[in-house]
Length: 331
Image (cartoon, rainbow, N blue to C red; front, side, top):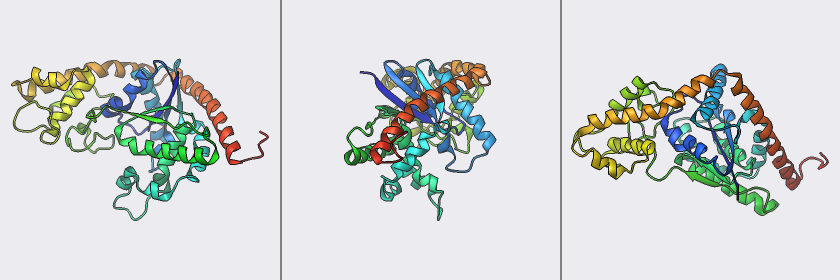
């Protein structure tokens, strides 16, 4: 039976290999045998102030990257979140069925508001908008990074809560699809922290649009340790373990096999080979991106995607309004 897939990426720039391996690669794989809906979640991006011109450019950057990594608009719906009003409309309905206690426990809110007496309200209710994104499309599967597990659980809790009160088929209760355990991509210069788009040092990450020289520089300077042994041990050797994880994710080679292949060879040879592997993997993405980023075809894809997404969203909102008693019921 065909499943419906929904996911989205924020247009914040510096989309890196952690985003690619954690989410975008799954987007492509899930197109086989599923109905896929992929969104650029620009409304999420304004929980903290953004330069309007830069944000709009980032929206188109992410849309072009979707297509460049292999998302096919003939098989998937690709659109910009703010061009479908149902996201904000459903978010309000869900806010009225969520609780401040469960929102205050969200790890990302705690992290982003730490050290401040007050924080934007949008940052606090961000998970509700994420829940609306998912539930608006009756999604069965949500491919996201491991850091979003808590948000998926909240989405499921809200869906079950509403279904219990307003009818068992008001919402589809979605399942998260997460990157396999142990495959979380960490910062290259601080392997105890997740690779981040917003990290100050560009050498902490490999962005999908980095050229060969930047990729090689970042990997060759990546933090390791002094013993020279290529061995997967996240507790004692986080830097080396991170590089082994990246190698395995791009090649599909089991980490144990890579450990044996580089036994006694030292970090230099391993890093050099890894830089070539990553560059070879990303070069086609970069080439396709450059072909389509400023094309009219990209705008056409997003317009068509918004129309298709709106058609689904409007059906969901009609059902929700009927269940909640909103409006006259005659529309």
